[in-house]
Image (cartoon, rainbow, N blue to C red):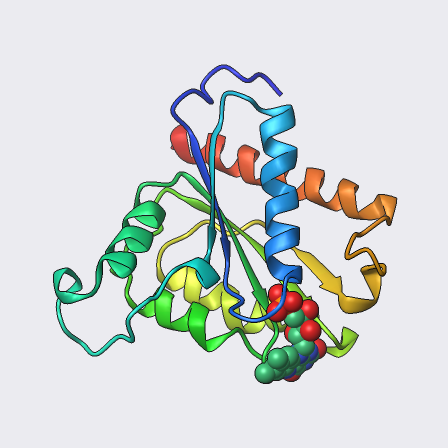
Length: 187
Ligand SMILES: Cc1cc2nc3c(=O)[nH]c(=O)nc-3n(C[C@H](O)[C@H](O)[C@H](O)COP(=O)(O)O)c2cc1C
């Protein structure tokens, strides 16, 4: 793909796990892929473990702590966002939902949001479609048709994923995100 026009484009990777390493690893693998293949795109990783996000109480955004404001602003200023979450109780994590609750309703207008889900059960591969995608589209995001679902069994003892298909899926997801973003800029 022509990399002209990618200047000033920013990708944020967001991991919505407060417990294990897997979600952060997969989202970070996407960031690493983009840094290597699209050096003109600015990238940043947000791991929610590193931030203390206030619970939404209905107060105005400015009244929350600085971590909350920082993370919300990073999302609002991104062009492309990869949102990763482990599946918890057949849904997304409470930590991720709480962060999304802080956002204004048009937060993701003109942004493309890719989805990554991690799970212990294959049965929950559609949670991304039924629980996360409707929230993102409510926030006016453009959501790729493809997403990345990773079962825990894909990780080896060194906490790595060696399946060659995995890297193809990262490439496909990101190419779709770029194509969608390009179509948004032309509409
Ligand atoms: C509280 C909790 C609830 C979970 N619920 C589900 C579930 O409903 N379905 C499922 O497939 N996996 C479930 N899991 C497994 C996690 O989704 C899975 O281990 C994931 O890879 C963890 O990601 P992490 O290492 O980024 O925290 C649950 C794990 C926890 C801790």
